[in-house]
Image 1 (tube, rainbow, N blue to C red):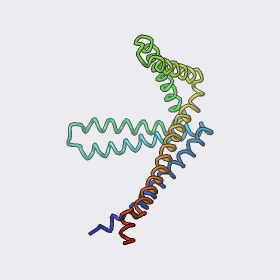
Image 2 (image 1 turned 60 degrees about the vertical axis):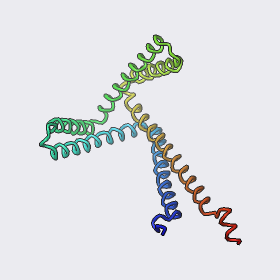
Image 3 (image 1 turned 90 degrees about the vertical axis):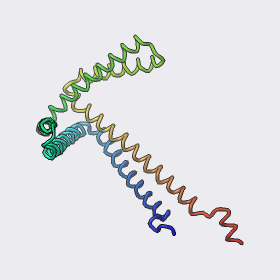
Image 4 (image 1 turned 135 degrees about the horizontal axis):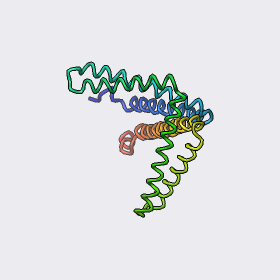
Length: 205
């Protein structure tokens, strides 16, 4: 006896709604990313506020987890890590501009060191990906120098730009998944709703 809860039409509508919500979320993220690319200063402050609140929430969750496992040997380590997260979250929320400057300097140093290592490694090894690795190293070195030479003013737009690009690409991915999923569900529903040749012959008989 067929299970009424496994109705293909109902499941198709449910999947279609789920993919629709996914596409809607992707569209919202795309719009947020585009707005952030226009107002990079606001996007930088927003990313700092989100970062600070994530540290606070992570610290509180870690502290509760440590208290629940206070008899274990990792109790004090969990407490210390949670306290550090809480302290870092408070600092970020109270000084978002200073935090953005520090993180921008850190990002510039990462670009510089990564670019130098890629350049040196590509010249020394000269593997099959020599040209691509050399290009990556040169781009990373140039980007690090540009950010570093314009520091601390670069902290106004660098993190906001990265944050907005992340929102934009994540939104495009969700949008493509949602639209593609709805199309696939629609195609499957159309095929299952049409009677097969054997069923048509049986109905004619």
